[in-house]
Image (cartoon, rainbow, N blue to C red; front, top):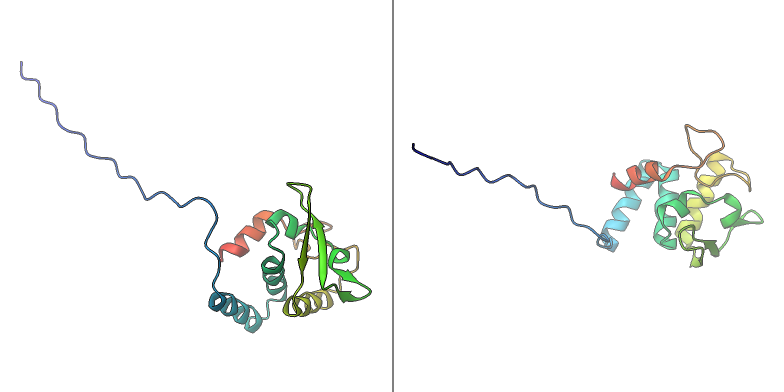
Length: 140
């Protein structure tokens, strides 16, 4: 009896996605994103973007900030200290003038009080923006 075997076709494997940290944004890209957010009058996204650049906090720490963490006496602080959720260590960062302006505009537009979340959820009253929603904003 004849025993014929046919070679199986090689399986298609899509390129693996790169893992690890993403490349840093270049200043040209940062300004391009800022201009788009300013032209689009997206105050929340602009404040979130500026604060993310200044603080370099993880998404879970950034979305869980309260107004009182950054505002004192009606003015946005020039320097802030936040406890990281993952490590429990304090992180100190400087808030630039651009970021202070965007945060102040956002707080005034939403009329947020000192104990309110800095980035409140639109769907869940009394909750902050979820890290999943933040990830969607970053992917845009």
